Length: 356
Image (cartoon, rainbow, N blue to C red; front, top):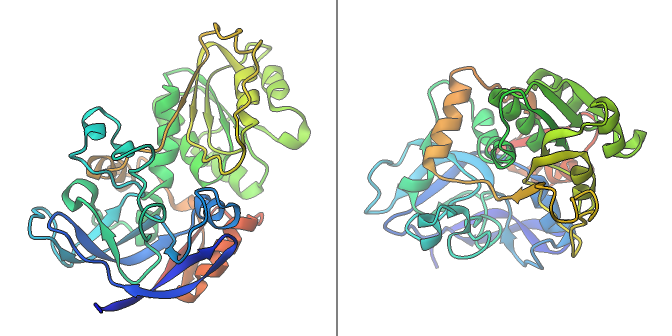
């Protein structure tokens, strides 16, 4: 037996708890990291309570965090024990054919760049393993808090990826569906890209206030009627140039298509945890000929992306602090933080746990 560690794990669908496992072994290209802070994601909720990726037993949860390196492999060149590092939620194998084709997040198969709490144990443990350390880790910039570093793990790169997929341009009118932690970063990304009008769909006051700060100009509540009807009323019947989907379900694409101009583009980063098919309205899609494009994607990981996005925070161009509404000290709060993310009370955007 090797050295043992504790981890907060999915015991089965709907069940979580603490387990003991061996500390992961470090390969020649890899790193072992001690978490400094971890964050709960809605994807963890889908995984545990909906069985979205299937039944998992004794799998340590979590893919959002930052940490301190405790061990590196013999072939790691740019990192050493003691380095404080950003850890992206997606850690591709950079020598794969998929990475060479430009889709590193699918290295080894569809969505296989998402390894933490999917194909291997996640980051909610005393130690965790990072493959291809030189390609996937990045140093935490001087002066950045560990809470901010957590948000850079997933929320920023995922929210920004919706903006990239939608190809937001200067002067565009953009609809952002869902303004939780990811959608707020889509609002911020669309603002940085030069959108002139950003219509946000969301109801919780804390999220609405944050979205205003990030550049949203108009707000829609699904409780007030169909999203597409409200969009058309706001735009004089023209619709929007781009749609970023960061929330909802398999039916959300219907509202997105109906809200979109011909030639417009949808960028979806929402994790569809249930349902068998996505609903696309035939007529509003131009009977398949409306040039209404739908692009979906798992956010890119990797060191370069982490360095670029962290530079936005370090330079003051992006403030992620409004995302952080709950901070807990001590591993014992993991279950509480997970339940908060499941229940989403009115004052919640993102819970972070600092192990101490």
